[in-house]
Image (tube, rainbow, N blue to C red; front, top):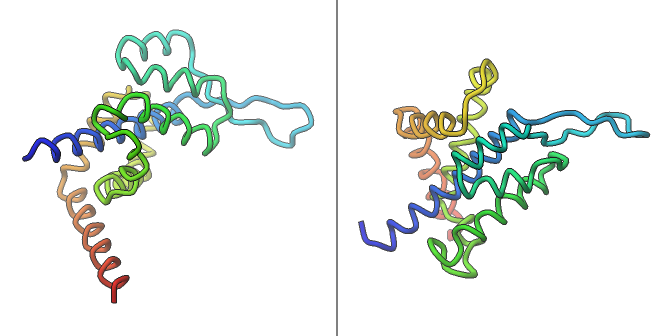
Length: 171
């Protein structure tokens, strides 16, 4: 595989690490916070100090994302911001050429991996709920699913759907 393709694949994998990590945090570290005058409590990211220490020791630069999320309301905007900031800080200028982060999000490879992850998380939710699994376990379980017959079949279907969509768009 040419060096450029290897760098691209590595970038997509690191982008997916950021997505998986952010989902892992929201899955296990959400708490409710009562707000005066609000009908319902806010969902807040609340990572205990001991867990933050473990994250720092085990996951290096992802710790910055945990810091950015901790104590904030769990929202689409805060999640998106944390992921994009991580990717810009960690990957832009090394694995991703400066100014091209947005185009990496639009690639079929990234979109297919993201869709596959979303399918996996929905299918695995009950199992993930039964016990606390660390981030490495999530990453390994998703990789196993991606490499499984079911995961490969879904990826092939997404590729076929994308080809069909781009073929009909030009017609």
